[in-house]
Image (cartoon, rainbow over all chains, first blue to last red; front, side):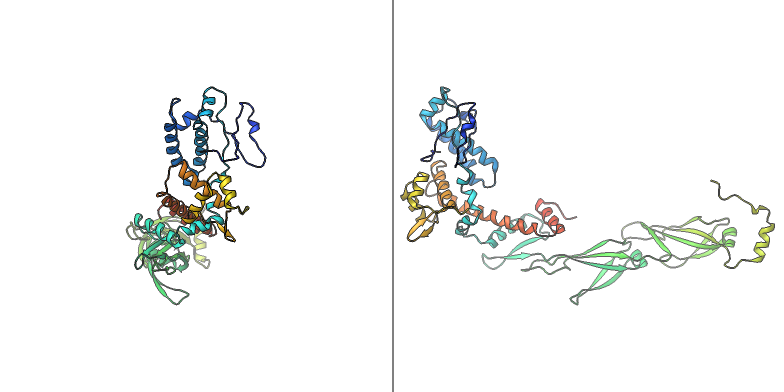
Length: 341
Length: 112
């Protein structure tokens, strides 16, 4: 780069770098160790070789061809500084003889067009490029759409002729849906009514748990310009059940039994999510005894069914029974230890 | 960014290019200075652009045939950057979940 008229070349004596500062203009002194190395030429390179090497590097690193790149700006400062020195036969000779150091004046960042191009002053040149914002979006996203799976997001479809119409996916909408325990366990069809009057049948799959979010494709806000609608996101709340609880796919139930059933065993009816099932209580069962009904739990699609676990709870008669009390008073085993570990 | 508007001869002397060169560039619409009366008035961006054209011409050996192509691409690049900035500002104004979705898309992460 040729020095601008009126610009001074600062010849810096090593150790006196502080003299680089000059009021009014922001100038920098950067020590370039070896301008030959910077340009990638030999000490014996001809003026023409130096010029060629400089042009090659400048094409790569000119800040106006690399807006936003600090690395390019810094690299360009180095190579233009090196070229300043080596392209001037007199200065090159003095450098080779060790009379001067490889530092020169540098252009302020603000003298590069890229510092202005993005601002209001640059707007007329951007407009001059015949550039409409929607052109940019159209171009950018049309390419993105071709490359990717087209899975939604922004998109631009081709309209008539060369005009590319703005096309955008609608936004997702969130809803909540409350289902009862049995519906969630066994699966159910629920009908949602939207504020706009639409209704939507929602398939609540078997085994749905509280806070599950069901995504209904394209049932959210409509898209613009022919873009796909967003999704409806439905967060499910499962109401608790008076008898049943769930642990994954297993259903837990606490079942009261009489003293007689516990002591002597017998057949009882047990509620399950599919209705009552007959089951045998073994003789000598107790409060806390855990029985299993295999395969009577929740059966989500494509997964093995869980089990139902029944925890027995032995109940005395509601009204004290005189005969039972009299028997216990005379029962030899009436004192037995239940509290020690 | 405003700065002072400068005359053709001031700018020619400041940058080290002839007034005729600059006038030719204005005719080709490579430089679009404002006008003060019937004279061009160059602001900071115009002057930086003249330096850029000079660099391209002298240091990068871009000739008059190739120059409009290069300038057009540079202008398109800045327009694209300006739009991207607008888009990012719009994204920054969104609630965080939406931002996250968009930024994930931009990074090429897939929807789970």
